[in-house]
Image (cartoon, rainbow, N blue to C red; front, side, top):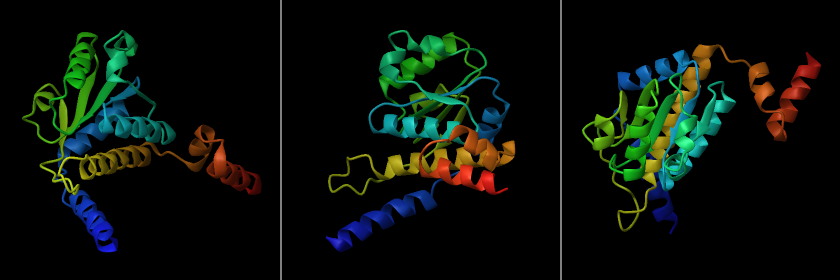
Length: 197
């Protein structure tokens, strides 16, 4: 079992280290830095949990962001999107109906840009997007080859890279972080540091 656990960790680490990242990621960060509204992040299923985590990380690091559930979006919540906003969508297959519908109606409302993280720019979702960050073909280490694990790990890693790159280029400081993170251990630590200075 220990060897199996190690093999899975190595498989996921290999996926992250071999992601075909190119200038599309730079374009995504530039779009977020110039965005005058919010970055709405969407995904469903396991990719939905990635999207929730991404919105939280973005907000913490200076990029105002909100998770938009595709199911709720189809029942009116997509109306929160304006012309100043960006939609960031996660879907490994790029074929998920709920995500494609959310993109379509975001376009109808005039969203500034659609950025997607998906397996291929040639997927239906990729073709509907302004900026596509490709994952490439990812083999899941699941014994059945089905459970989304390596693909979602890759999505999280990409999202973190976007958030932290944007954070750096915003000149985001510890004080900025503290203003958004007053609870928990990190908030307490930052308050103590501020009291000492």
